[in-house]
Image 1 (tube, helix red, strand yellow):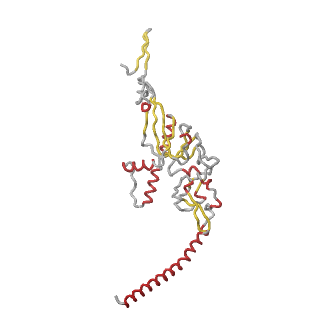
Image 2 (cartoon, one colour; image 1 turned 90 degrees about the vertical axis):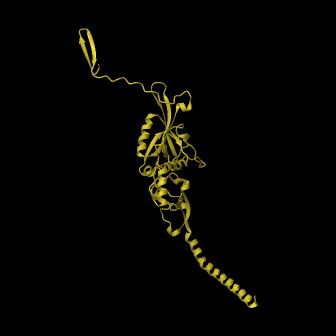
Image 3 (cartoon, helix red, strand yellow; image 1 turned 180 degrees about the horizontal axis):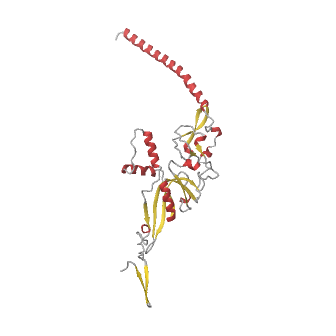
Length: 319
């Protein structure tokens, strides 16, 4: 390669490098004011926003919200400002209007315990509130808190001829706890830690039909609560969908489908009942219900006929 071509090649490389350097400086200078403007724009304050979607009836917990910087010109009086908000007072409140993830929480979107309409706001659409008596033994020793999900067990003795049959049956599954006694938040000690407190009453969220079943169950025997894992509802829903027991409407919107699945997973059910008898626990107990006592045959009308000193009862229909 001759010297002229080498000199031209070197010159072209130098020109390209200088051009690239000038272009970089020009773009950096143009973007700097925008960055500064954005930083100046968010300087205002921090307000409370939802960390996830909060449907109507959601009981607020500490992981439901967080403080986020917000433009000063966009901060409204109805927002929860960091300097004016005690987040501990928000725990146990209920969402009155639906809130999307990242949306600011407003004072009108939450209803506090004791306020008018609190329990109605805590209930999902078409649901009812039912209160049942519990004790330390039947109420999981006080470790059931508002927002937990439980199964309802009925323990009773079936009488008949022979020994009684003792049986415990899971009659209702996936019930949401709305309150224990008159509390909708867990009790805390001086260090701010939650602790178990035995309750005498537990308020549950049910469907109208299940509310009737619970009322009847209270007259049959003793009701007990069984605390559920958070993953149980999703697993049972997937099983029901796979078996065809639940059919999801066809939709192309994944958000709508996710809302439907979440709603179905939150509903209680009484269709999958299981039971255990005394014979399953002890070999000295029976496994089958005792036979019912034979009922005396009903008698028809009786006519008493007297013949001298002889008196005879004649039953109509008797041969």
